[in-house]
Amino acid sequence: MRSKLLTLTCLALLSSAAHATETYSVKALMMRALNSPAGVARGIVEGKEADKIHETTGSYDPLRGEVSTLKRYKEEGCSRLSVKLIQPNTPTQQGTKTDFALNYELNLCKNGMPPRDTSE
Image 1 (cartoon, rainbow, N blue to C red):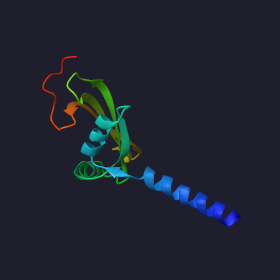
Image 2: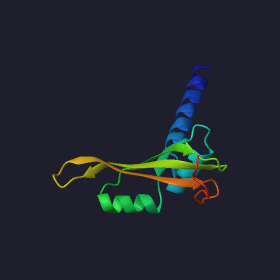
Image 3: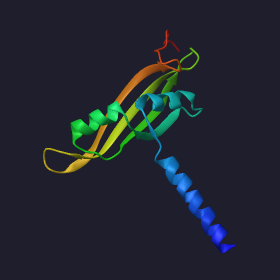
Image 4: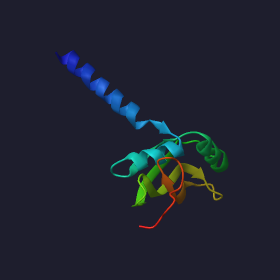
């Protein structure tokens, strides 16, 4: 009985660890936020955006992405999104390390295009 409990506990931990390390493209995170009832999505970013930031910053720690909905438009499936990409342990010119953050906003619909009408 005790070994079954230990096995179940280990499986639960492995499952949650696998979920915590899911990776996405920036576009996939934006689509997840558009489809989320709460309008948010978070995850580790991989792909060309992550590669370019790693190359530019000189840090190869995982790039975190956070997307949140700022405003939903009348047009179905369209929102204004806030995108934040965070690169930890980025070397500075002074020889220390800091978090590099890239923040931007954009209007996007579930079809991948910007909305036709951004009036509220």
